[in-house]
Structure formats: structure tokens, C-alpha cells
Image (cartoon, rainbow, N blue to C red; front, top):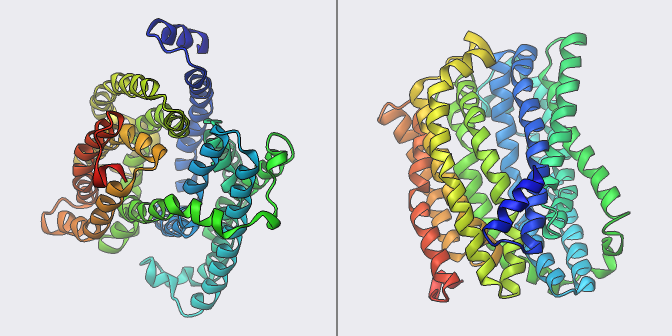
Length: 454
């Protein structure tokens, strides 16, 4: 399959080593992503069977809430990815190691501070009220929350290795991590259904610990093999390098916060405005339509660091050819969405049975979101790669401010129900779909001025 793809690229004149590396990792990604998606789909009915619909809804809301804290990396991951890629493009590996060391030890200090602060605040919080659930779960939450937050803080540190691999143009690393994690989760949850009674506590601990263990092993492997000369050293930490990483990293940080508000508050809003049970059909529809999102993201994601490399080397013709080819492939997305909408009810029934009912309008809102976000991602990948993200920062802040009140307005005032939450997200994406292509064309044609070039 990879050979056929390479032959196709040769015919259209794309023969660069950069492109062939992307093709190799896309081919690998499809295999691992396919396995991860299959494992994830099998995991949903198993988890519902193990936890029941209400507790599964609680878990979905809880995991979304925890994901909000990922912004505490203050953009270090994306900042490191760009600066490491730039240093590597210039063959300055001593600088690359200094960037890695600075990022690792900075995020370690942040994680320790975050966990200490949480332990203090946790004493005063009633988590059953936060998640709008039964008081019977109070004892579980008293143990579960410190454990999950502690593991999450560890994950902030160890997940930096994925930024290093991505900056090194090892584009398939994230799907490999996801595949291993999802398969292990599937096996363990299946074992739980056969050996133990339903327990949100046990499920939450396992679900949080596995990604940390997988990433920890990858750190040990990476810095013992491919990146052994780039191993972090506390003696290489330097405030100058931190400022360089954070120059672009702080903007990424704010964009990350905005993205979290835009994409990760939906479960929480639904749980509070409606109930935890209503989170389940929303996530069933989201997971179904995310099949197309994930497939397209496997194509687009590898280009980020490759765009950085090409931009530093002034290889603008490669960038133009790449964007044009991705746009041609994107035409498949709307066709695929029409087919998925047609098959949606049948798929839901086969997947989770009659226990969960997904309204047609909810499926329609998900399809619209996938259409807009996939098109937007083509140009965001380039803009992020070259670090010209000030305009994206401004629009992200606007979206962050209006998303939650707009979600409630669409859901309650306009009576769209749960679907209104996703329609509000689509509304917030609307101007990005227009502005991102304009910015790309201005930058690539050397016509970007002011905020378009910052």
C-alpha cells in the first residue's frame, strides 16, 4: 500500500524526502489508528455494561473536567515542538538538548506545584455537587480525585516525549501510543467485567494510570536509544531557552485554554444543564463521527513539523504543493459525512443497542462540526508550524468567551437540547474557517502584514 501511495506521489511530482517520510508515517498511522478506533468502539459497550449508563456519564464528565488541566503545561509541549524542529533543521543538537532539558524541568516544577495546590483545595470541595451526581459516590471521589490529579500531573511531564518525536518528524508516534493504551484498556476492562463488581473508583484509576505507564516506558526507551544524546539534564536548564520556548509557547498556551473551553466543556455543560445520562448519547455520536475526524487528522497532523522544517529552509513550493494535495483529499470528507448520516441510526443500534438513543439532529450537528473542523485543520497545521499564531490567538479568545453562554442559549433558549451545545461550537468555528485560509495565502505569497504575519 505504501509503495502504491509513493508511486502516486511520484506521478504528481512530489518526490521529496520530507513527503516520503510523511507517507511512511501516514501508512503506519492508518494501521495503528484503525486498531485504536476498533478497541475504543469495543470499549464503550463494555464500559457501559461495567459502570451502567449513569456512572459512565459521570466518568465522561469527570475525564473531560480533568482534561481542562492540560493547559497547565503553559504551551511548553507545542513550544518545544517548534523550537526543537527549528534547531534540528539547523543541525544544532546542543541547542535542541538545551530546549528539551529546559522544558522537562520546567514542567516538573509546574506539576509538583499543581498537585500540591490541588491537595489543599480538594479538602474544601464536594465533588458530588460539582458533577451533579449521587451522594453515594462521595467516598469514591475522595480517593479517586487525588489519584487522578496526581497521575495527570505525572502525565504532563512524561508526555513531552511525544513533542520530541513529533518535532523529529516521527509523525506516527501519537497513534502508536493511543493504540497500545486503548488495547490495554480494552483487555483490562474486559477482565474487570468478568472478575469484579461495578466500581467507578477502580475504572478511573486504571484509565488514568495506563497512559502514564505507556509514556514513561517511551521516555525510557527514547532517551536510551534514538535520543540518547539529547537526554534532559538539569544543568542545561536556562531561562533564556525557556523564554524562547515560551515566546511561541505562551500563545499556544492561551489557544490551548480556548480550545479546552471550546471542545472539552461540552460534557460538563450537558451534565449541569441536563443530567449525566445525557452526556452518553452526545459522546456516542461524537465517537461515531470522530472516525472521519481521526482518519483526516492522520493525514494532516504529520505536516505540522514538516511545515516548520520547510519554512525554515524556504521551501515554499513544497508547502504549496502539500496544501493543494490535502485540499483535494478533503473533498472526500463531505461525501463521507453524508454516508455516515445515512447509516447513523443503524450503527448506533448495532453498537450500543436500544439502551442509548441518539437524536438525528445531534448526528447532524456532529457532521457539521467534523466538516468545519477538518477544513480548518488544513490551514491551522501550517500556521502552527510557522508560528504565526497571533490572529488565531485573538479568535480563540473570542470563542472561549462566547462558547459557554452560547451553548446554554442554543440548548435551552432555542430548545435545541443537547444538540445545541455542538451547534454553538460550530458557530464559534465559523470565522476561523474563513480567516485561516486567508492567512495561509497571505503568508505563503509574502503578502502578510501586521497581525496576519505575527
